[in-house]
Image (cartoon, rainbow, N blue to C red; front, side, top):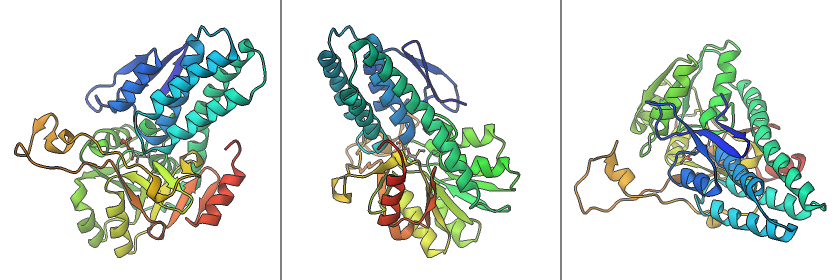
Length: 345
Ligand code: MRU
């Protein structure tokens, strides 16, 4: 299943807020519509945000009436700002925008040629996401043994990427290879990406699984029910810190306490080669998401909340990082070597 597509300047993607009840495809015709869909969580998941960002820039080029390279570049800069101010944490979005802008600035050619070149490059970025996720899924499947019960958090599946998924991609690859595995999916409050999206994907793929609420993880680990943890990432720092959906850090601490391997699966486009932990912006979302469940208020009026959408897991809690280039230890020199080996960034 491809989560996002480009057809003659229109971006076609799944409205993830309506799943699992309705599978509705959105037709987004402008960068503004894409930005709005990202803000409203209709498009979400780090690699998919990177893909949507590239397609917003492709749309800008496709629709541009610019008469010079300079004015096309100005229009691209405007879209870049629009997209970069949608959500602050998933680095794929920023990496994608910067990669396209760099290509636009550095490709010496006529305006006509530049337009053709940029649209082609943006579509290649999308195709590349599917390719790298497939590759990392196959590497990760080696770490899963038949009989394993694997816990995953949030949604790191096809819906969070162009195709295949990351953590769920690994699980699906192990299942396809005939490994007899079982998955535990956390519901992932407050927006329930686990209950709504991961459960939807696992059910469609007929992978045996059970859904739990987030606060059940420790008990299940203590009972010896969980063999491995596999999650995705929104940003991986050169220091090895992993930024992912809120609750990931809690699960990593619990995994350490119970001696359970904790794996992070992510393409190298999720690596942030520039920022330190202190510089990362953790998105703080609307208090309503905590105060309500399914649009229904569940707490008294006039109370305070916290609603950080992501947390930070330090490298000593991560057993290994699964990427399209292979499985590595989460150590700064290994991450640096991985980036140096990856082309283009
Ligand atoms: O707020 P979301 O739904 O965009 O958060 C998504 C996650 O945290 C995923 O785990 C992460 O993007 C990895 S997706 C392959």
